[in-house]
Image 1 (cartoon, rainbow, N blue to C red):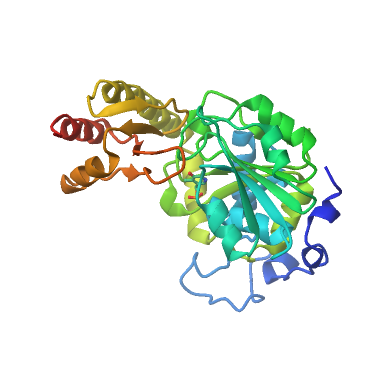
Image 2 (cartoon, protein in one colour):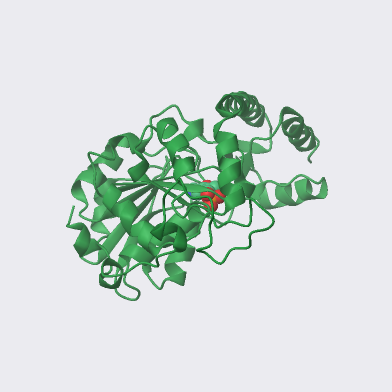
Length: 345
Ligand SMILES: *Cc1c(COP(=O)(O)O)cnc(C)c1O
């Protein structure tokens, strides 16, 4: 990896961050807080939240088996995705390379930040090669985007190729693991100390069943986390979200049970799809959804909408011709989907 200073935008490297009242005073003994122009009424929400979410991170670090200094929390993973551009990519100068197809926000944030977004198509098994990504890069490539398990294809990317990219690419490699809890493979967060150029993204939105809470996780070297903390809004994770995060972290057994139920239903639903005459192929998945190639995805999508059942029509995405993406619901929801599809003609 290049020196971090060579990868970070010069204005960000030199940035003097905003210092809040909460940053300047951090003692625990005080009982009278007259420093932040807050109201004394309507507690506890009258107070600004902890800018660095330390209590949440203390609970989260052992769950993820990383150190608190390796954790960044944001308003969904989307905040971390945007921060990657704002910290590393000089608008109209630098570029990034991503696999395709993948999660749409990497490109949207590139467009917003005026950063050239280069893509390398996955192969027919939805796998990538480090060689191909490196071939698409030049000296102005700051970031490579990987998503594993990948959305919308559902599969994990080849571990050897990810390691190869991490070893050979001199810039930042992001591995988005939004669906890692549905996979049997370990997280790349466990090799952060080996790869200083690695950023792993996870989220509370999927297995943790808290999409409405808006809490995303980035894990990286303490140096990269320090850059993110400098650039983020001072109070980027609100008080209600921090309280709710502590609550869901105390319910880990429920989360594990939900994941088991979803995996069980995933097996049942995929098997049933395989037996549908209108389904041509069910792709392997490590996520809480799967991709299915249908005889006529557009028509089937519209038919399901008419029945009040919404799946994701991915038929216009590269390599996903005539494919629907189906999220695993409750047993009753999945059964409703199957009954509708069995009646389709
Ligand atoms: C759903 C999803 C996310 C989650 O985004 P949040 O902003 O945390 O809700 C991130 N990455 C991928 C690939 C996803 O599919």
